Amino acid sequence: MLTYSLDKNKGHLSKELYKALKKDIEEGNLKRGEKLPSKRAFARNCSVSTITVQNAYDQLVSEGYITAYEKKGYFVSDGVGKKRAAVSFVVKEEEEKAKMDLPDLSNNRVREDNFPFSIWSRLMRKTMAEKQKQLLSPMATEGVYELRKAISQHLSSFRGMAVSPSQVLVGAGTEYLYSLIIQLLGRDKTYAIEDPGYMKLERIYESNGVKSTRVQLDEKGLSLEMLENSGADIAHISPNHHYPTGITMPLDRRYEILSWAAGKEDRYILEDDYDSEFRVSRNPFPTLYTLDGSGSVIYMNTFSKSLASTVRISYMVLPFDLAERFKEKLSFYSSTVSSFEQYTLASFILDGYFEKHINRMRLFYIRQRKAILSLIYSSPMKDRCSVIENDSGLHFILRLHTTLSDEKVKEILKEEGIKISALSDFSHFSSISHDFIISYSNLDLEIFKKALSILSDNV
Image (cartoon, rainbow, N blue to C red; front, side, top):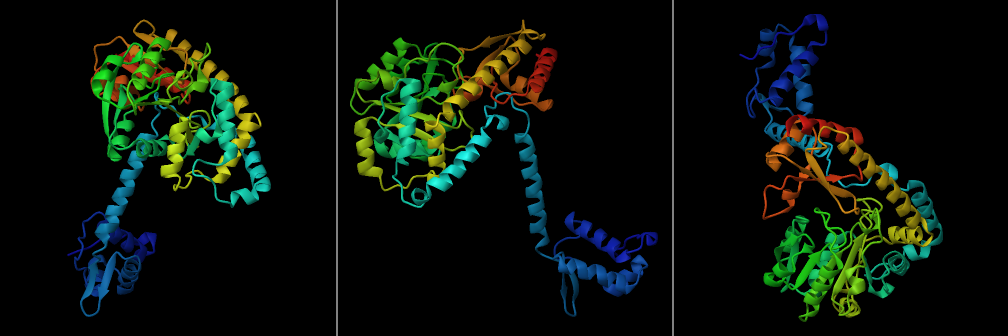
C-alpha cells in the first residue's frame, strides 16, 4: 500500500504530499495508468486528513500528473511519460550545449568585443532614415546595387581585381552560393575538393545531388597530378590561405591550375579567398581571378571572418559569361539577404569604416599571434613541438613531437575541459598527423597556457 511519512512539524501537509507524489510520478516509481489509493485509505496510511489528500490530488490533477475518473478513482496520467521524455530531452540539450561551450583552441569565431557595434548601429539608424523607400522596394536577385558597387571597389583597392558590380552576387553565406553555382554549372559536373579540407563541402555537394572527389595536397597546395587524374570538372580550392594546413599556393602552381582549367571547355575553379584580409606580412599573392585569362575562375569571399560569423553575408564574382547565364537561368530567385543589412554594409564599406576595421583587426591579430607564440616558446613544450605557419590567416599548425595518436591527445585535453582539432580530422586519407590547429582570433591566452601545461605533463 502506498504511504509516505510526512513531517507534521513543517505544516502544509498537502504540499508535502503533493511533492512526494509528483517526484514518484516523474521518476517512474508510479507508472502511467497506475491507480492511486482512495482518499480515505490514503489518508489513513499517511496519518493525515482526507482534506489533505484531496488538496494534493487536486493540485496533481490541475498539472496533468493524474486524472480523476468518476466512480473509478485517481490514475497516473498517460501523458506523464511524454513530459518526462521532454525533460530528458532538455537535459540532453543542455549537455550538448555544455560540450559546445568548452574552450576550443581551434575555434575561429570572432571575439564579440572586436565587432564595431557603435559604428554599425549608427549606420543602421542612417539606413532607416535615408533609405525608407528603397527598404520597401523589390531588389535584384544579385543584391542591392550599392553593396555590389562597394564590394567591387573594395576588391579593386585591396586585391587589385577589376570587377563590375554586374558580376557580383550577394547571398546569405557561402553554402547558399554553392547551391547556386551547382545549378548554374549543372549537376553533371564532378567537384574536386582539397584533402585535408573543409569537411562540410563533401556533404553540401552530396546533398545537392552532385559528385565530389577528394584530391590530396602537396607542399604547394592542390596536387596538379592528382587533380588531372581525378576526372573533376570543377576545382574548389583556397589558394591564398588553405584551411586547415595554412598553405599558400605559389605562383607556379597557380598558373598550372589555371592551365588545367583552360585546357577543357566547361572547367572552372572556385576560388575561396575567405580570410585574405589578415595576412601578417608581405603583400598577398594575386588572386587566381586576377591571373585568369580564360574566364574560368569564380571568386568567393565572405564577411564572416572580417566582421563576425553571424553576419551571414557572402558574395561571389562571376566571369561575364556566367553572370549573363545566371541572369537568364536563375534571376527568378529572391535575394536571401535583407536590403536593410545590405544597405548598412554598403555604407560601412563606402564610408571607409571597413578598411579601418580591417587595419585595426590586423594589428590585434598580430599582437595576439605574438603573445601565443611567446607562450609556446617560453613553455616546457618549446622543444617538443614545432610551429608551422606562413604569416597569413587566423590560425597556425602546432606539430607535436609525440608517439601518441591524435585522438589520444584530444582526449587528454578534453578530460581537462579543452577542445582542439587535428589536421587528421579534416582528411579521409590520414588518421594521424600530430598536427593540431591553433586559431588565435578568439583564443583566451590563459586557456592556451593551461593547455600547454597539460600537454607538457602528458604528451
